[in-house]
Length: 152
Length: 154
Figure 1 (tube, chains in turn purple, cyan):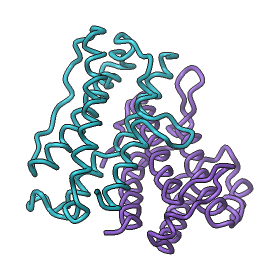
Figure 2 (tube, rainbow over the protein chains, first blue to last red; figure 1 turned 30 degrees about the vertical axis):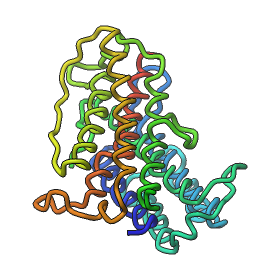
Figure 3 (cartoon, rainbow over the protein chains, first blue to last red; figure 1 turned 180 degrees about the vertical axis):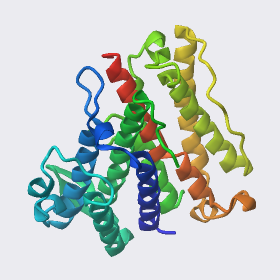
C-alpha cells in the first residue's frame, strides 16, 4: 500500500464514523446548545465541512469552494444547517475525487496553507484529525441531550 | 529504517497526540493543567469523565502495542477512577509512556507487516486494526475532552 492509499482509507473510516454520529439528528438537536458559550452541533458541523471544502477546493486546487460555487449561503441560509443528503455528500465526494487524482509524489509537494508552507500529505492528514476532533465534540453534545454518541 | 508507510503512520500518530498540527488542540493540550477533580467530573450520571476517556486512550495504545508485538490483544473497560491527584498524574505519565512505546513498536514494523492479517478470523490487516484505534480515534476523544473542559470553564 502507498501513503495515498493510507489517506484514502483514513478518509473512508472517518466518513463512516462521522456519518454514524450525525445520523438521525433533528433540526432541534442541531440547534441545541448547553448553557454558556458552547457552539451547537450544527455550527460545529458547518465549521468542519466548510473548512474541508475550503482546503480541498480552494487551498489545494485553486478552485472556488463548493460553498461559494453552489451559493449555499443563498440556498440554505446560514441558520439552515447542513444535513446528510444535501451539501455534506458534496464535500465528501469532492474530497474523494481529489484524493483519486493524487499519488505519493504529489503528497510530498510543499503547498502554501494560510501563509505557511506544508507538505500536501500533512494538510490532508490534518483534515482527518480536525474533523474527528469536532466529531468528538458533537458526540459529547449529543450525550448531553441524552442521545447516544454513535449509533452504528 | 522504517518504510514510508510506517513513517507516515508515526507522523499521523504524533500529530493528534502532541502535534505539530493545525489550529486544533492535541490530546496532550486538552488535558494540560487539569486537576483530578476536573478530570473526574461528569455532566450527567451516564456520561464518561475525562479521566475515563484518558484511561481508555492509554489502554488503546497498550492494545495496539500488544497487537503489533503478539498478534493478539485484550481490550480494557471503562473503570471508575480513584479520584486522587496522585493517581491522575500517574495516569497522564502512563499515557505519555504508552505513546512513546507505541511509536517504538510502530518503528520496528515494515510496510509489508502492516498489510498482513495478525488475526486471520478478524479479516483486518494490522494497519486497519491500528487505524481503528489510532489518530482519528484519539482526535475524536480529544474533542470530547475539550467539550468536557468547556462545560467546566476549565
